[in-house]
Picture (tube, one colour):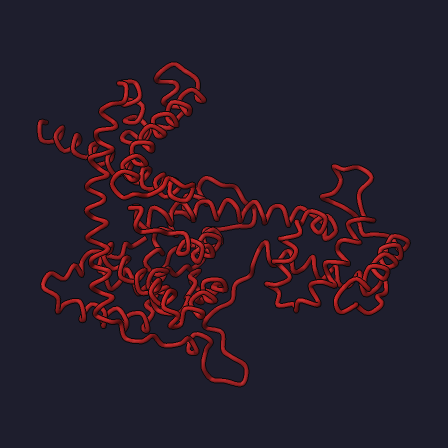
Length: 438
């Protein structure tokens, strides 16, 4: 992959694949115009930090957050976050609107690509290639933006990398689950929440969802395998079973508001077959191209995306203030963690060095220390818990952040990022010193 080097490239281009290989960067002209305007606006400040990608992440994140908070387009933003499942032709990249989200989606392209590359190397799948792994990851972009909290100190790239990896693993698990089951086995596996969510995503009305849920519950009551382990490949219900399901449905339909019409076995079978199709789509969502030509029109879907208002100079000031504040926090956290590592026992310090600086696997460390792999895992967890406690205590005393589960999760991301950069920087310094001495 050819890395992007300029701020303009980082926030305006998207990965393109050809035959399952990276083929280049696609430039979004709308984003390019937007980024040029923002860069020009910030050039007028005394000390414009325009060459820092961290500043521009804070800038666009602040723009998106402000739009959601002040109600100016906030509803559209929230709806777009929930429904962003689009990609460009030859590119597995969601193009959300408004522009701040699009800029952040462009920025995370490389992070997503390397997450997909790791998955393609380490995970086995007969049907997925690199581009498919990329799509699994980038589909989680809305959740990444919703869950990211800049105030906790971790960079967006680090947080997104963890989220993308989890999204790929979850997506593979869901796909394997859906592909390995018959329609009826899949329907029996679904939870109430998943069943309702997938019907809402399919665009069904509240009344239709209520009818389908009643039919589904009747199906689950009377259609069960004789062997509990045979649910995965559950066969089609026979005629007698469909008749029993229908009789129960017609008895219960009067409890709905408004009451449903009388159903037949054929109708219920059609409904539930359609539900299974919706379930497979929900578990393994298809993608649509922004370059698809619209019916009866000469333009493309992406041409209808709304334009964005000019950025306010105040937003640039707020983003710069937030970015500077985060830099201050990083320096303070660095000192807290450096002191905490110094207080660790020498064996734990060696363990962290081998794992993060030398990048040894747990198995390699176990062989080196002549111990078991699970012992190495426990010791690593113990060391990181000690460091995490140091961050939590400092956050509570200095920032007055209550150590809730969400806050601790953010601190864990920050700790992992810091350990990687701290030990890699130390390792790089040692190599340079060794080369100079030689």
